Image: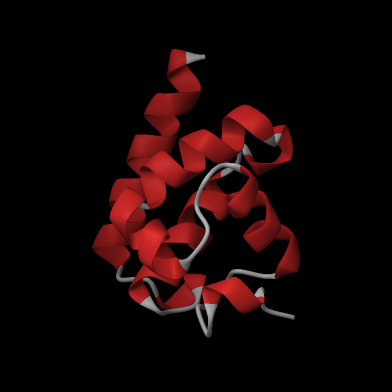
Length: 90
C-alpha cells in the first residue's frame, strides 16, 4: 500500500513514507527537491534498517517515477558507486 502523502510514487509504501515524513520530507515534491542521496542520508541517520542500497535505489525510483528494476542502468550504477563510498566512510 502506498503512502497517501506521496501520491502514486512507486516504491514509497506506508512505512517508507512515514519514515520520510519523520526526517522532514513530507511529499514527493519535497523528495524531488532534496534528492535521493540526501533523503537516504537522513533516513540512515534515524532509521538504521534503511542503511542499504535498496532503500537508496527505491528513493531514486520514486523520484524518476519507476520501479527499482526499471531505473536506467547508468543511474543505478552511479548510485551503487556512491553508496559503496558511503559504506567506506563509516
